[in-house]
Amino acid sequence: MEANPASSGGHALSLRVMRLTKPAIVPNWPLLADKKDYCGEELIGQRDKDITTIPKIHNFPYGEVLTVPQNFGSIYLGETFSSFVNVQNESQQTVRDVVLKTDLQTSSQRMPLSNPTGQAMVSKLVPGENISEVINHEVKELGGQLLVCTVSYINTSGEKLMFRKYFKFQVLKPLDVRTKFFTTQDDEIFLEAQITNTTPHALHMQKVVLAPSPLYTATDLNFLGNGESIFGESDYINPDDTWQYLYKLTPKMTQDEKSNVKGVSSVGKLDIMWLSNFGEKGRLQSSQLQRLIQPQGELVVTVQSIPHFISSNEQFQVVLRLRNTTDRKYNLHLTLRQLPDSGLVWVGDIKKVVGEVPPCSFLDINLDILPVKSGVWDLGEIGIENLVTSKRFDYPSVGQILVGLT
Image 1: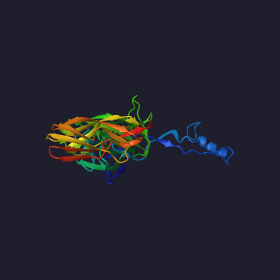
Image 2: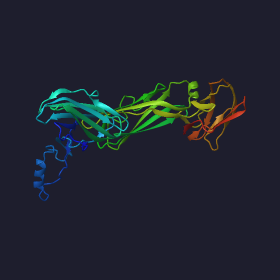
Image 3: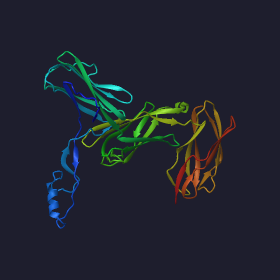
Image 4: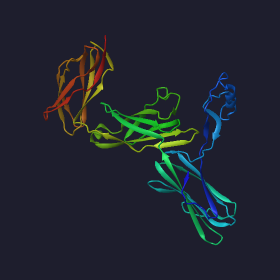
């Protein structure tokens, strides 16, 4: 922790601030030697005397010795900042009405950590006595921050004195979180969250949960059917490693409501919890994730039913849903077009009268297809005409299917 040049010199009281943090393991740099080497026995003897090594496991890079941090260390966003603040009377006089106040100054605000009203902590402090307190604060902002400690008291002459110390520290980012949204042709929404460990040590990931907004329900796709995590038994993410989490979002809105929504929609927040080396807890909550909603067309065509796999020369059926998103009635005529060199052939009439589709409603139609060649094929082009307005809609591809050998 770095102190401001302002000091308590000339005052009856002294102020000390110490950060409360867990110790660190002293790394052991193994000295590899063999008795046959030059001075081998002497080197092995020195290695065996090294207190940082574990007996009989001399080549292990960590030992049994812990060290108390000699400096302020690193503070990461989402962790709890804890400090011990002590005021000592080092003079030969008794002082009165001692007030100790601590504040945290960030780039956006100044918040009291202790004694916000500025009340006296003790009525008098005799020589050699001290007062102390422990402050805890969950760090929620990145960048430089300033711990401001203020001490005031009344000396034996009745004069009110005050001094202040400043301690500056940097808050670092422990995790880098990036998100992507994917929307399928069936209006299924998937959220991918990529989380990278930017600290120099491994983190134990306790929880990564998507808390959906009231507009959506979320399904966590990061667990197998037996409840086991897709990341296996280990929950430790190493430095610079990236883990990918996947969630499925289901809108609670009806199709009519979705067709009227435009612009940006709030999806929810990611809640992330972890433990660092010695079990220090950390927690981050992302800002509200927002998804850009693409406006729907007047007539939306989706595949409701299609086989995942079919053998060649085995006729199958596809169910298409034609959704009218407008407030006007549609009278539809369907035209099926064969793709060049396609392995699929439409069965039956390639021109069909679909009929009327009421406003904000849909109609399902069944189409028969015969696969004649193996491979992955597009179903073909579909043209639809609204006979009421003579407006045409073209859909180059509505889906694909895998055709295998018979």
